[in-house]
Length: 372
Ligand SMILES: C[S@@+](CC[C@H](N)C(=O)[O-])C[C@H]1O[C@@H](n2cnc3c(N)ncnc32)[C@H](O)[C@@H]1O
Ligand SMILES: [Zn+2]
Image 1 (cartoon, rainbow, N blue to C red):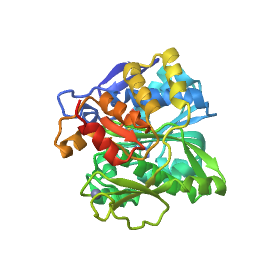
Image 2 (cartoon, protein in one colour):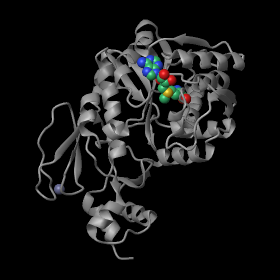
Image 3 (spheres, rainbow, N blue to C red):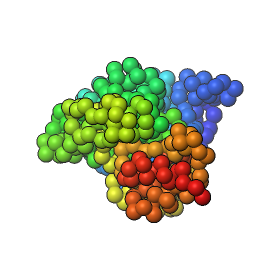
Image 4 (cartoon, helix red, strand yellow):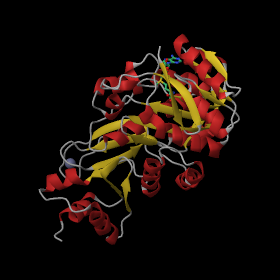
């Protein structure tokens, strides 16, 4: 296997040479490395610098880049594991080159997390993490980080796969990326509460082809019950953009107040906030001192997340404009019109055309279709 050196953050590692002429170069090499996940890794580095866990497991190491960066940039004791012997050989080579005392374990993640626990656990699998969440909850003391790249099942494009993996029914709506994140989070919550443990989302976001959760695990039945109170459904009309939230695990039947159609339940999913108060400000401050490679995109993401209202869905105002048969004004104009009516309104990191608001749909329609 031909290797090449790359540097990310303050870390240099060897990765297998990839065939850049293929559609997905990371898939062309025997051991996985995706340069486009630099921002994903940068966010985790900054969060770990804030959360300061006593140790960290990179449970799906591949080249080891993630764990080696954590050891180098956060100064936390790190274990890196993977079940593939070829990956373990490369991880060993890379950790030796780093000169740091990183523990390397060749083990299936489910087996390792059933036997040992770590203060912070990071899951970065191919596609879905559904198969490893149960063991990860048992093997995590305080912080659980999860990447999912199976956006089609999570977002409702592959409906049956989504139902099988996450025990929830998504829907391919205009806010499907947010549905995907909330379905994944709802699944992790249901896997967690059975152990009388709860969850606090620290910083969760969706981007390009992935969803990323950074969660704090809480102890006790009370915390579990409080966490469960944020699980419920979004009831979406299939004829019009109307939707409403319903907390609880039993769906009720609701009729659309705008067109009289029965609403369709999406879920169960997480309805609560997806970030801890003040976390985006802390991350932005750290980004200025750490200077991560993805800084420009990262600050854009953090600004969007900081502004974002904690509603469970958003409107795509271009979709609404098309429905109203008008050409969409600038998004700033729509936001200002809604705000002038005394409503809370924001953009969202989930979509450039997305609008979050507590205003009734009629007010949003008026803000889009009003004459200049
Ligand atoms: C997407 S890659 C990880 C990428 C890496 N974390 C990074 O940031 O570059 C997924 C890795 O998970 C490993 N893997 C797959 N199934 C596993 C399992 N059951 N237990 C442990 N590792 C597994 C694969 O061998 C692969 O190296
Ligand atoms: Zn309707």
